[in-house]
Length: 173
Image (cartoon, rainbow, N blue to C red; front, top):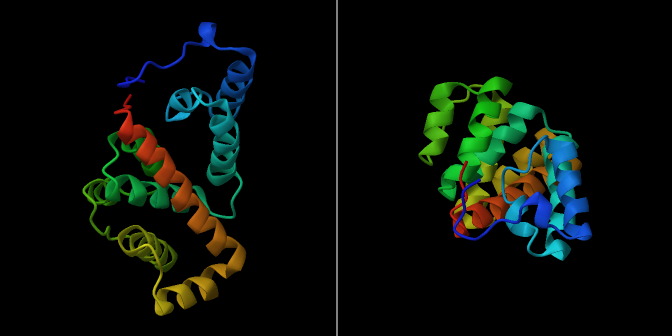
């Protein structure tokens, strides 16, 4: 990753940083993303990477649903680093190239599937207005259930933290 702050090298990490780094690499295969910046503060890095692992791998959402939410955040927050990492995953998961391009520009993608449309609407409301209107909340609660609705909000919030970190430090592949 390139960055406007110096990112710690694996050889220069203290034991606490090294343990967090190894956990990131074990769950994700690499340390691309905000993790190297977060390692400057191991107290932030450890719980953030654990939350990220849950948001990415352990929610009740399908991969295409999670990636849609991530790209909604990346587009709204204009996060090139997040787009570079997640656009290929989203396409492989089933989002069309056209949908990915629309999300990259912060637009509303033509998704077809009602559940994906609902997730996009929910994400946009949270990102644009910091809340959900009553109609969207009720539709989401009915379609997703409370657990998944809570997880959706968590994924959006976590990836907003990721995007802000990547943007603040101009981190890109």
